[in-house]
Image: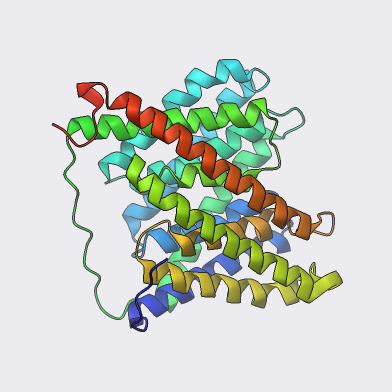
Amino acid sequence: MLLRHSPLTANEFRQCLRIATGATLGFTICKLFDLQYGVFFTVFPMLLLGLVPVMNGHVMRQLLASAVLTGLEVGIIGGLFGRHPGLMLPIAFVLFLYRFAAMSKGNLFLFGATGVMSLSIMLHFASYPGTNINEIIFNNFWAAVCAGIIAFIMTAIWPDISPRQPTPPINKSPNRVRHETLLGASIATAAFILFQVLDLRDSLSAQATMLLLLFPMHWSGSLASARKRAIGTIFGVSFGMLVQLLLYDWYNLLILILPILWLGVMLFAHIHVKEASGSGVGFGAMATLGILFGQYLSPNHDFLYSALYRFSSTITAIIATLFLCYLVHRLLNRFQATRFGTS
């Protein structure tokens, strides 16, 4: 992990404040109202404020459109085929396909990225007997709404000091777009199959890891991202275990958890903005922390066991994703129409 040694700029420091406070506020809302699937409320603000430094109407529309469309798809597909995972596979592949196409083309990257994450998690949970599909759909939708509102509030409180340079568009050949779209959809579907076959209901962190590794959209990027994600997971899990040991029997007291969560996210946000590489070490650590606190921090969960389990399952997911990514990459490169980097 290479970080520059210069101090944070005013814009970067304010972005750290937005990320840490936004994620903590989402977590607080989840706990105060006793909402299920707290991972959505904690991680969505991180995703929004961490990967999209400038909040605007276009970003909000993508977020809401993704939440509404994903909810409709999961409600229909989960209701009709929730007990028949085999029938869900071709439909899931098509749903992943158009989302990765949106990510590859760039102008709707956030729509595709949030949709891929939510769709995979929600379809996986919807396939289990006893899951309240309506509950998970509405939690995902309200988490997206809350994340958008929180992002606007954080931007109003800590706006950028100086204008940011817009990200230059990447001109991709049709071959590369097809390669990235098929690569992402194939592995996301393979991950869905893997979690269904192995009955990995409690491996949300590993599932998120497999999807985050696909965000670079190509083999070389996934390989570089894997190392950063592994280091980030170690940081996030280590911080979670330290919190458990520090608070001992008081780790379920919200008034003690909130400042510690804010401090942890602030620390990892500092790494994230210094990396300036999207989903790297800092973002991986933040996401791990968000999943641990948002989904598994409760009096009925062994937080220490959850942290260790998250680490082992995440490392396994990284290895499996890289193996699948390499195989699909090699297969797609055998055909001219889907060859990466050629016209």
